[in-house]
Length: 560
Image (cartoon, rainbow, N blue to C red; front, side, top):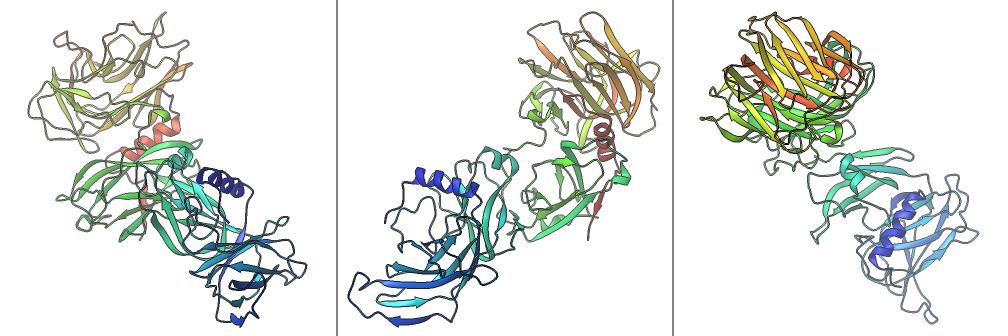
């Protein structure tokens, strides 16, 4: 009996999964006995497998169609003939399979109404003999959440349980989540779960000897081959109430000799991985890595930071000499999450006027040209800028992505040395928006709504105190707000939309307002971590970003 073609079978199996097929597993044990066939008839020369099906109470299960699969069969790509003819259990729960000889098989059966089922493996049919199997009990199933390994070429593949009809395609939703869920799956101990990648690549074993409990979800982490791990959690007491859950929040993880042994990892940190408590991988990006100094800064994208601080445990994995840096298919600072541009400013060059030095951490790729003469300067997080007068970073862009009209969030870390009449931290050249330090030590957020200039001033900042301070500004379509070190400083009404002059020569500056007016709006001092969003971040987001990024931050509690 031939199976359907691969595409038809894929649709049929996926439909079966959606109908919540359920099963429980057992291995064919030593109680199996053999009896010779009398010979003759249509069963002459065949191997016969017989058994009985019951529910958990021992009552017979009638009407269950029992099917057989070769032990290592792939439910999608395997087009070989089924090893046994299917059989429907009778009123006594008994079944009788007529099979071909050769190889080990597994059998499964599904009750059409109760949706309970069984899986029994380790069965070896023999020609002209009958194998009497132990009773199989149909139970409510569990399910598997399988974390996907690091790869940019999994779309179109699938994760499956060999020797069964149970699998789950790797689609766009699975890639975004970093995992697939196979529901149902056998209860008991499963021998193997495999990944079939597209393009004819060999399938990969993801896990072996997996224990699954009835009605429960078993999580399979992606990093079973990593030798070392350590977990940390967010401490809500360190940043206070958030007001609401934060989605796709970029969490800064600082590593040092106190929480991480750099000698156990690869020299470039390529074997670092992060995962949620259920094993689902988390996107991350290394900003800086200095193994000799035992110091690193890594950004991890939290899918959700809960307002009450619950469920915030993350596990860091390392210690795999074969690991490579994962592809950036799931960025930390995603444009889909509202980020328009993020510049860590850790890069260094010996000469100025070098294009594209300062990399944009978003997929937008608006890299900054270098007009900074100083180099090797520490920042608030990794490396940073030391701007003294007529120096700047310049970004040229053609799209309107960096010119949001309805909502805008700006932030930067600063350590000013001195002040002029006006010192530009960052500005969009087309008179759209700017964030500056004023001669009276206040910060000013300013933009045009087409009718008037909206301006909001903060309280005075400490100047020359030798400390890094975060300045942030938010426009939400109704108000303009400025924050200092995570705390709201001032707010004014601001109706309408941000207006731009429409000049096609669009440019964005860090550390200056323009490159055409010498000495105008020059900034003096340290500057680091500039972030621009086309979303209005709330007070909780701003407060957590400050508490997380501030030098010496203590919001992460490392577990033993």
